[in-house]
Each structure stands twice: as C-alpha cells, then as structure tokens.
Length: 179
Image 1 (cartoon, helix red, strand yellow):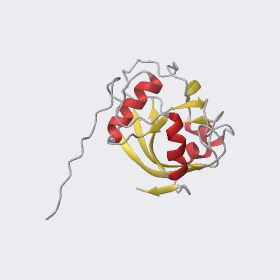
Image 2 (cartoon, rainbow, N blue to C red):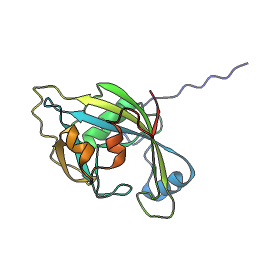
Image 3 (tube, rainbow, N blue to C red):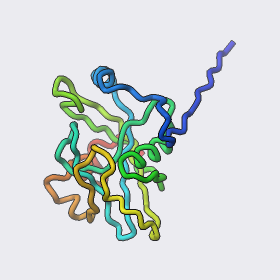
C-alpha cells in the first residue's frame, strides 16, 4: 500500500504569512548543513535597463546585485517572487519567464565567516509594463543601501557588479546548473 501525503502550498504574499520563516540564530545552522533554495530577479524596465541594488548584507556585501531572496518551505517560486519583491521593492511583482537555475557559492554567510553559503538560485525575468510608473528605486528595506537602473553593457563592465549578476547575461556561465 502506498501512503500519500498532501503538502499545503502557502501563498506568502500576505504580510501575515510566516510559514517557513527561520529565525536568524537557527538559519546560520541551516546554512552550515545544506544548500539554500533562493530566487533572483532580473527586473527590466521599458528601456531595457535592469534594476540592481547595492547590498548591505553578506554574502556579497557592498556589491551591486539583482534583488532576490530565500524561498521558504512550502512556498512556490512564483509566490516567493511576489513576497520578496513586496518586501525589498515595496510592490509585489510577478515573474515573466524563467531564466534558469544557478549555483551561488560564497566563503561566508550573512552572520559570520565561520562557514560558507551555497545557494541553488532559480533566476527569473520580470518585465515591467510600460505604463508601470511605480518608482522601484525607493528602498523600503534594509537589504540595499540604494537601488538603480543599469544598462546591460555597464553591468558587464563595472567592477562593483558581482560576477554572479554578470553571469546572468553570459551565454555560457560557469555556475549555471540547467535550463
């Protein structure tokens, strides 16, 4: 006899949803023991520019990086995109298409240099509507010191843009897992 288990998938776009949240002191231990599932957003405006934020936190502190974050347990990627964009940018956005899956491996973590972090990143494209007048460069959270729109050519050549962000525009990036 086969046992079947039904998993509840949680829509976490609601501010009150806490399913899957791990307190920082416990999360450090999780990072030490396993990979973290996350999602990054290549957000394009109608001029073909991409939104980058200057990171306040490790890993990748003080570099320009695309917005993104951890996918919580029982959370669909699309729901995570909405939750994280609302938290980091002040507006829940929906993905337009999938870019691929990437490995991001760092020698440190958000809290210390005792051990590294390994993210499995589901990168997605978000193309804003041409009439979307909301200013995403306002910083509503503590993840970024500033947000700004970048031309792709500048992303590829600027030394302060993190290589993992640059890899999203490379035809054969070394850290792409598949797709």
